[in-house]
Length: 230
Image 1 (spheres, rainbow, N blue to C red):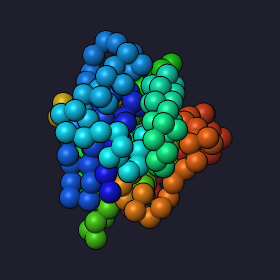
Image 2: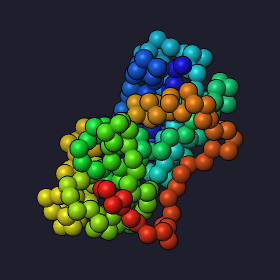
Image 3: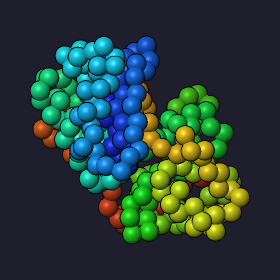
């Protein structure tokens, strides 16, 4: 099964193609232009480089959010169009969950942050389990970064454009416990969207393209709470 995945949750956009044997190709661009200007060009380019056509793609995946309102709309609209044109199914993937896979086997919990504007971030917390895979220890939320970290008592890996943007505020809140990811790990990966999307497709967890909507986080009344094990 071959999958084409699109990631447009942040300014860094990208496309990946994968199958059960692993990654086939990936393109990532962090340039000052809108996703609408480059996404179809990137898709055409990655197909040609892979020696493939759209007809050879079995399923499409997209990072559905949270993230940039404009980016998510463009990414989902692009993939919906491909689904309509090809008759292939669609799977939606959590942007933050896919991002967490940059840090598989991490000994420390993760706090992942995308810029939400107005001094806030879209964030989630994850912990790697010994048996494999992540457990979410902080549910998706929109908040000030320092508020997210008050309940964290040990070292935590922090990554994402929100982490870079609010680095000084984070350091003021938790000091040396903040372990900032290196630059290559600071950005989402389309290949992670492809990996999680392929798993969902093999389980037949498809979403009707007509009903698919981006996952926008709004300010929640629910209390932000980390798992006690974090």
